[in-house]
Amino acid sequence: TRSRIFVTRKIPGAALDRLREAHDVSIWPDELPPTPEQLLENVAGCDGLLTMLSDRIDETVIKAAGPQLKVVSNYAVGFNNIDLKAAREHGVCVGNTPDVLTGATADLAVTLLLAAARRVEEGAAEVREGRWGAWKPSALLGVEPEGKTVGVVGMGRIGKAFAERMVRGWNMKLLYTSRSDQADVDESLRGRRVDLDELLAESDFVSIHVALTDDTRNLIDAAALSKMKSTAVLVNTARGEIIDQDALVDAIKGGRIFAAGLDVTTPEPLPPSHPLVGLPRVIILPHIGSATDTSRCGMAEIAVDNVLAGVAGRPLRCEVPLG
Ligand code: GLV
Ligand code: GLV
Image (tube, rainbow, N blue to C red; front, side):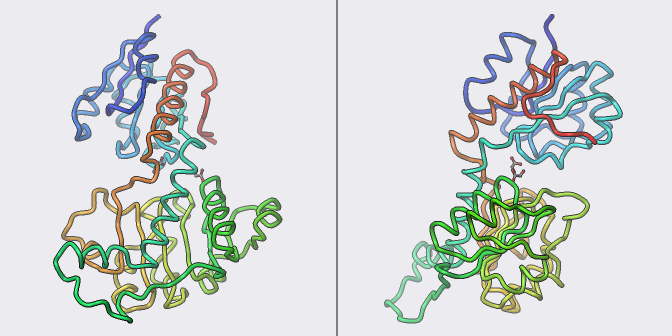
């Protein structure tokens, strides 16, 4: 029997064709996401939802879908946009898309690290805005990662892929935080698990790779930033809410850290009037960590497999544990 599926945005690749063959699928046609009201209207009567990280799937949405709803398949590895408690209480499975975006996201963290460290944004702006003057021996001096210490906050799949790149490519010393010891990281990457305070104090480069939870919201606040070296570079490709942005503005303006590279902010999109946007030492990208053809098509395959399994009452290919 055919199920009703709502997909909240067009996604790349051919995976949606498999979904359409088996089920009655409606896809939100616009580039802009459905508003909360439009989301409520469109989910009504659906057995499965394929959602983006920018769609808030709370109990209201789950209830608006109705008791036949079996699966919410998120087109992302993160799932902080979904109320997992409500999903559990209403018997709804939740899926995500890990692994296929690990390398792409780690690559973007490296990109931001180097771009912030070498002041790429400031340099490109000089050229673009006609301010490229005489070659100056001491203009736009940056910092080098070679042989320095990198601190990885959260040693999950992406944290580990990022650490591998920095240790193998730039011969960096590795400190990391993690809920558990990771013998393979300690061995193969000569990593050392430390607490956050030690990581912040000792690292020349700090990159955030934890999931957003109540424990990690504002993890990098004014107190945390004050522990970092004034020459340090901060990178965030995880979720914007993990950094207190007002505190980051102060730290950058006060020269208390060297620079920051962000792929995620609060809110998204970040309005151009936000104080972070105008700061020369902050490079901001519009949440493109997984934005490669390979990664986004891989995510589409998993997200579709998750919907197909969910509506059939089978375990999902990548199922988020609901506790
Ligand atoms: C992107 O942020 C993701 O969670 O996949
Ligand atoms: C995060 O979800 C990761 O895979 O590291």
